[in-house]
Image (cartoon, rainbow, N blue to C red; front, side, top):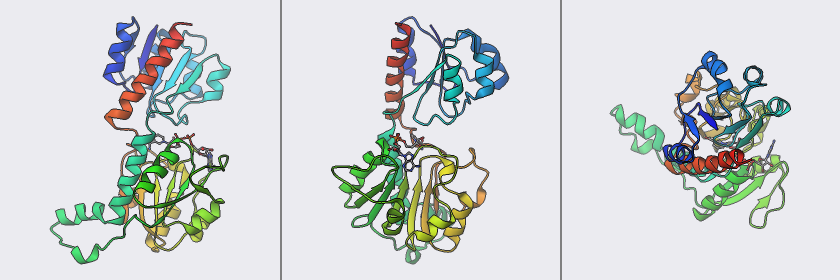
Length: 298
Ligand code: NAD
């Protein structure tokens, strides 16, 4: 079996697959080259950079490519339906990165609540803004989690350990033994902090109307997908003090051209690194070994 890991793969996973006789190429091929060489591979592994869209599937269909693995959760860079209809199986590694994403979200929350991000900027500029940086504690605050799947639940447990009162909204999952489900608008109204953990969707879940429902001085985190928040409405909410701080790991366009958002003093930004930890990448590698071995043994 020949595997192309076009966006890279944990080196332990590469070694393990090679030991079992599987050929692994970890070169990153750009579009034209990729379309040309994909016929030589049985399996393509991607992160978010490589797009396995209709055009790619058209180049790959009828060749030996039979498996696409998304090393991570979101499948929005793969046309799953079109691939499946053309005999290519698509799978992902959904369990590996939940803890890493939840920790990054908490990092953004603390950075915003205690002015850590902006202090790093102003202190380097020689400004001692001690009086301006009286923050708030997370403990005792209501934390609304929207999308209560793997990451949402992992985050709820960590936030509870910090003394936060977790409420949640999910479109499909409503009965939880430990945490209170509330309708979407109610979570927006009651929360001091809100974090989004839904899959990528076509239309923003949070726009002008939703900001109006939120408390003044709310903190908002998005480590789900860029399109989930309307960035223009977010900038307006930051500028009118509706939102006290926003932690953003994912953007409507990546790399983001939105300098106004990135440079905003009330924003903490990271370049889509939710799953970028040694541990998550190792676990993703282990999940991929199982998927490839299982496919190879069929
Ligand atoms: P999951 O499938 O376990 O959970 C998603 C939850 O959202 C489900 O419970 C589902 O019922 C709910 N949901 C779906 N549509 C909804 C809607 N419109 N409104 C409210 N709830 C809705 O997924 P997960 O593993 O928890 O991942 C969540 C998100 O995190 C995904 O968008 C994924 O792409 C993203 N993610 C980001 C990073 C990163 O690097 N920042 C890493 C991993 C995952």
